[in-house]
Each structure stands twice: as C-alpha cells, then as structure tokens.
Image (cartoon, rainbow, N blue to C red; front, side):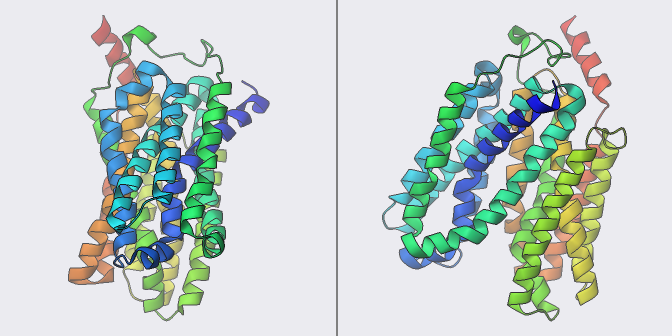
Length: 396
C-alpha cells in the first residue's frame, strides 16, 4: 500500500474513534453545566465518566469474538449507531441525574466496540511495515481532537445548553454510520500474511495476551490520575489556578506531539519491540513520582514526562499485541481495549481514595508504581515469532 492509500484509512479510523469518544468528552467539558441543571452532587461528573469506562471495559470482553465473527465494518457500524443513540438519550434524559448513568454506560459500550474495530481495520488493510505508524497515528489524533473539543464545547454549552450539545454531537456518529455503509475496502493476501483463515478464527486464549491486557490496564491508570490531579498538584506548589490551567493545556499539546513523534518512529527497528514500550512507561512512572515531590521544579519536570512518555506508548502497545497474537485480531484488540478502559476508570477512583486517606502525593506514587509494573508486563511478552509458531503447532 502506498502512502496515498494509507492516509484515508488512518483518517477513517481517527474519525470513527473520535465519534465514539464524544460522549465522554462532552461530559468532561460540560460537567459543571450538567451538575447545575440537574441539581446533581459535585461527584456526579466523575461517576458519569467512570460509568462510560467501566461499562465499556466489561462489555467488550463479552463481545470480543463478535468483531472476528462479523467483521470490523459490522462491529464499527454497531458501535457508531450505539453512540448516536446514547448521545440522543443523554440529550432527552429527565431528572433524576442518575438516569444519565444509563446513557453514558451505553456510550461506553459503543466506544468499546468501535475502537478495537478500527484497530482491526488498520491491521487488515495496512501493510505490516507501516502498521505501527498507522496505529500510533490513530491514537495520536484523538487527544488532539478532544483537547479542541474541550476548549470549544463549553462556549457552545453556555449558548445552546448541554442537552442541545449532546443532540448536535449525535450527527457525528450518524455520519460514521453513513461512511461505514459506503466504505468496504478489499483485503489483500500480503496484508493478511500470518493470519489464520477466517474459518479458523477463535477467541484468543494465550496467557501472554492477558498479560498484555493487564499491562494496558496498569499503564492506563496514569493518564486518569494526570487528568484528575495534575492541576491541583500545580496549585499546591504555588501556581494560580489560571496558570495551572494554561500549563495543563500546553502539556496536553506536548502529549499530542509525543504521540505524533512515536507514530513517525513506530516502524523503525528501535521502536518495533517491547523495549520501547517499557522505556516509555517507566519514564512516565518516573514523571509521576517526581510530581509527588512538592516542589515547583519537580512537579513541572514530572508533569512533562507524565504527559509525554506516560501517554505516548499506547499505539505501540496495540501494534505489538496485534502483531504478536495473530490468530484473532478482533479478540486481541478487544482485550487491549478492555484493559485500557478499565485502567482509565480505576486510575481516578483509586487515586481519589489515595488522596482521601494519604494526600495528593499518594495518588502519584500509586500511578507511578502502576506504570512501571505495566512496563514490566509488556517486557515479559514473548516475541511475535514465538506466539505464531506455537499457534501453528496447536493447529497441526
């Protein structure tokens, strides 16, 4: 596949992922307005975001085999339609506020199947030598788009209201449904090299795959803690809330740039293995540990490493898992997605508990430990050739 054919595929994957993340992005950006309008407790925003990730993490484990059975296109179609329904349901949800938990849970289910489906899209239609770039580029653009949404959406919410914002957002996954009905690329044998025949696909059962999913869970706890507690940590060392918020936005840009850099380097020999993933997760954990030291210099240095290295590894992790466990790409992507969503939910929850009992530094020590352990989990994975060889022996 030439470069010209690569970008449309990556662009479609990015668009579908972004559509599926709109509900949680809107909830984060409009949380204050939602709480005020529904007379909800201050903790409601966190519970709504948590419902999105928890429901998604459990649902995709149950539906993992569906992507391989029915194909990525049908799975993504179901995910986009579910997201559209969830956005409209949130827009018309009456009091009490707890009913929104149902809408956000439904949205989490839609996202949990859309995102692994787009990973399978890139696995099936992008040549192996460019797959690392494609996967990292897909995941690099999502935080960039959510950052822009976080800046623009509050203004929209204050003019037309949060309910209208959810209703308008439903147009995006509906456009995704139209895109999926029109777009059905043809796979080539060279792209599918190393895959089993469709009739031999089954849910992956390698213990090492669950080790990769566990590494994804542990590593994904850090971004959640960063989102929840970075600004308070900056304020604690002397920055004003305005300065901390501005720096938080700048660090988000740095995170996007780090993912873009990883995408450019993803298919180079230096980045192809699991050592690069372990190194990035370890540096991210080091950054979190530095934030735990209550001094301006250490917090700023730690914030930089936590945002860049602590978030930069996810595309490589997906690419490595899909290359290592070739027998069922939909199931593999689902396990990784479930781990990522579970970690995104657990990070803020356990971090909040740590802050309650021991203070802000405890949340950073917790996330630092989880990130380092996640890196060790990826380091322990077998090489791709070993897993493929074992799979073929099982079939013999």
